[in-house]
Length: 239
Image 1 (cartoon, rainbow, N blue to C red):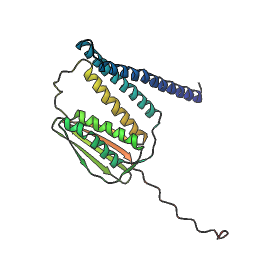
Image 2 (tube, rainbow, N blue to C red):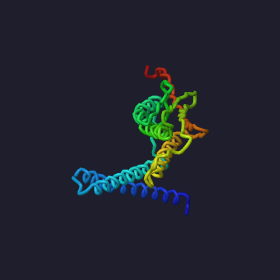
Image 3 (tube, rainbow, N blue to C red):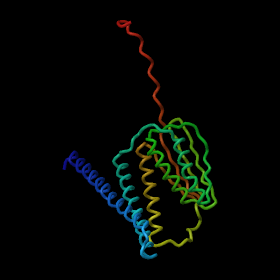
Image 4 (cartoon, one colour):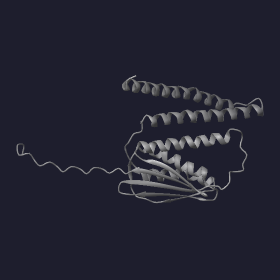
C-alpha cells in the first residue's frame, strides 16, 4: 500500500471512529433523560428508586467516557485551535472556579499572582486543560493541606508548577466495587487530554512524585506579538 493510500485509510478510520463516538453519545443522552424523568415519578418501591439512581450514575459515567473519547480523538487529530490566550487570566479563572471544591475537601489553594502572559492556545482549550490539572491536584491532596500554584514567566516560555501534599497511606474509606477504578480512570483520561492539549501547543505536562508530595509541571512557549512594520515611505509617483 502506498504512503498516500495508507494516510487516506487512517483518515477514514479516524472519521469513522469519531462518528461512532458521536453516535454513542446520542442514545446515552436519551437514556440519561429517561432515567431522570423516571426518578421524578413516584417509584413503586425504595428498591426501584435505588436501582434507578445506580442506572443514572452508570449513564453519567458512560456519557463522560464518550465525551472523553471524542476529546482525545480531537487532540490526536490535531484539532486544537492555536490562538493567543492569557495564561495568567485562565489560571485565575480555573482556581476561582474550583475553590469551592477545594474548600469542601478541606484544602487551601495558594496561587502566586502573575501579570499578562500570552501563549498560543485557544482560551477554551487552555482553560479546560488547566481545569483538569488543578482538579487532579485537588483529588490527590491530603486533607487540611495546601496546594501551591506558581506561574513563572521566562523570555521564551512560561511554566506553571502545582505542588500538592499527598496522603502517606491509601484512604481507608470502603468504596463500592468498581467505584475506585472508575474515579482513577476519570483522572487518568482527563490528565491525558490535558497533556495532549499542551503538547499540540509545543508544550508539555510532567508529573514528579516524591515522599509526601506530587508536583505537576506545565510548560508552554510564550506568544510574542510580531512588531508592526514601519509605514512605507510615500511613493514619488503618487506623491
